[in-house]
Image (cartoon, rainbow, N blue to C red):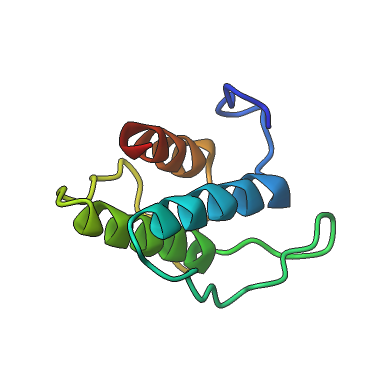
Length: 102
């Protein structure tokens, strides 16, 4: 959805998180890992508040897939945290790191 994302003009949406979760869980399955137990499991478009924890969990789930594949987990260009908004770079980094292992 919305590829490429444009910094400053593309709002981060629930679908960006849910699509990444699905792709990462598919990678995890490919490498013999279970579905990741995301804390904020039910993200509802237009209702759910997306948090830094959603990004950290996506990164953790993907890192486990990289490790299972015998690869070093990727670096990220951002450091989201409490009170810091999720930005386009958070999603773009995850997307490119998913594509790199697919």
